[in-house]
Image (cartoon, rainbow, N blue to C red):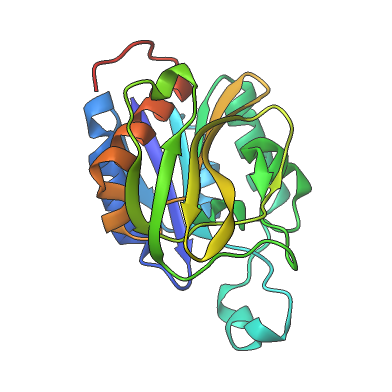
Length: 229
């Protein structure tokens, strides 16, 4: 099975975390390709379909004075063709994984939040600096063998959640006084979607318990059944 990992954006080493993700998902039989041009990667799906499409990027409009010095080089709006490629992939039964900053991506495309099951809300969503985040598994069957664990990462808070998501991990940290859903499942069309708010860097992706929980979620997305991982 093939996994296309789309990377790009500022403030993160997306290539490094993508390499870690490819390594973590390899036991599922996934062969990952990393593509740094998001539009090119999405255009390739027509001729080279994949089982899993992964968004590990920070690409958005960059509205606001804070981003004036970055906008010319980094601002992005996903083209209609790019949007159509994602929807076609899912309607065709493909799977999608959004990692960390994926919830901030494509800020002018409201449907992206419907696909992921949640999205960043400017003026409301936030996160404390990197710190130890305690992850508690929900009672979902996929998490029955996962214990409480800690990972050094950012706890995304106050995302705009969509109804119908199935939460797998709940996060708490010293910098945020409210529990936050961190890993969840969603359905869009005929496709299955996983969003993981963790993954700021390769170390967070590789953390053993996190990697195990993520593989469980991706197994669900790929409809692999009870895979020994």
